[in-house]
Amino acid sequence: MVLTDYTEIRALLTRHGFRFSKSLGQNFLTAAWVPARIAEESGLDADTGVVEIGPGVGCLTAELSARAGKVVAIEMDRALKPVLAETLQGRDNVEVVFGDATKLDLKSLAAEKLAGLRPVVCANLPYNVTTPLLTAILDAGCFASVTVMIQREVARRICAQVGSPDYGAFGLFVQWHCETALLFDVPPSCFVPQPKVTSSVIRLTRRSAPPIAVQSEELLFRVIRAAFNQRRKTLVNALSSQLGYEKSLIEEVLTSCGFDPRVRGEALAIGDFAAVSDKIVYRINGTL
Ligand code: SAM
View 1 (cartoon, rainbow, N blue to C red):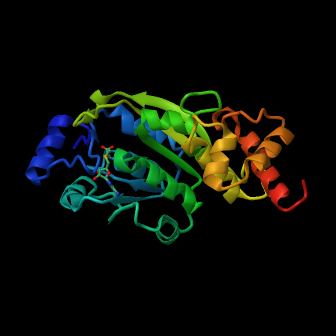
View 2 (view 1 turned 180 degrees about the vertical axis):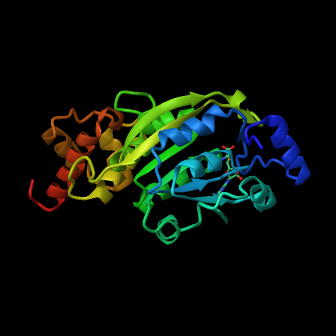
View 3 (view 1 turned 90 degrees about the vertical axis):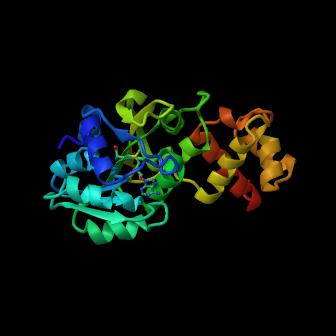
């Protein structure tokens, strides 16, 4: 069975009484080149164990299974159980786990089911939960790489650098943990039902250490989130109103870092945020 052939998928799903769920972000691929290329870009081999989130009818799962040591596919929709049993029959290195990937402990799951293999994530993610899923995947801290298809708009935010209109807190969070690469776009015509937006495939490669050593990672990300929560405000106003610091302290910190006190957070690169948050730590400890 060709798992990206629209006629075959429709016959298969009808036979199992399946109905697409919008709330589960069910847009299944109908262009064979897409799952093949996503799997190829993941750099898999027999020593790799893949966590896939949302196998759908299993078109990407089959491509992953052909290249990796093992695939653990997490699917929330139990209506796909008989479908996947049929489409993945005979693929001995695939295990399907039914559950909500946003609620599972991905680190324990990878340790238990992919022991001895290099764990990676590869998926066409359900778009309604892209950000919580990517946050959970990065927080798990165990995946060497994450190759995923997501909405183009989110992909651009994740890969955005300072100066871009897409630059923001989530991109900085991802870039803190990973090297990012925007690989290729996929048009709505490659799915059934067709989504309203273009999709992009990105690859995140986990860094062995953060790009910069900082005094407090927790404070760094509080500063970044405060800066972008109110991106039209000056950094002085954003940090004093959201983090409760005296304006004079923030002004002093910014000046000592070489910034105009009227600067906005969106003008600061990750290294600048690191310098600002470190100076706040020193200033509070009385060492500045
Ligand atoms: N991999 C298939 C493909 O490329 O054709 C399907 C991708 S579809 C965009 C997203 C899949 O994620 C659906 O099968 C949906 O049921 C599943 N899904 C949605 N939310 C989920 C969640 N929280 N946990 C696990 N799977 C989820």
